[in-house]
Length: 164
View 1 (cartoon, one colour):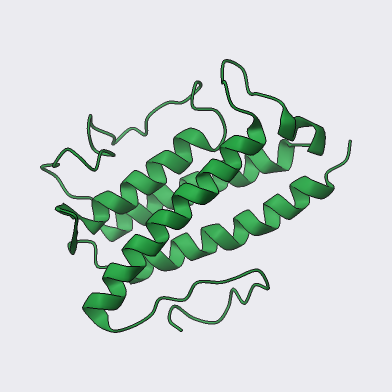
View 2: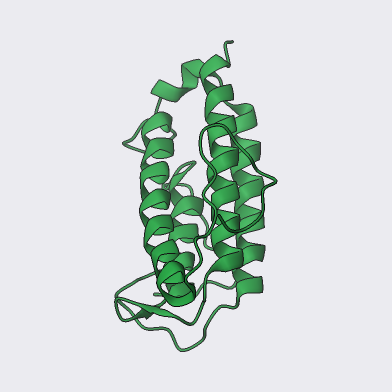
């Protein structure tokens, strides 16, 4: 059971999730982007990661979730705090890390039970989705604060602080 490709995915996922953690520490949750607060964009991004990374057909909402909370088209009465977003993120990161630890290269081209997409397509789809939202939210942070949140690249550098 080869894990050469999965090991690369694990490392790149670790870096990507580090970038998400930086975003959650540097964003201004109450800033507004396209008529919705940034906290809602961040939760939308996290909810999608939680649902779609492993198997969207076998997913249970978090206990605090309310209908529409993850939608960028529906306003929410109650806001999530930075601390709530980070707690949610830490739980998702643990789930994603544990899932990747179980995979083999051969499983990447297979579909999870009941899902029309391969495991690799689900993973790459979340890379695309996360990066789109990382860019949008970080742009709001840069425009409001004049500071550039760090985005760690291929070579790592996970211990270099929150800002460029």
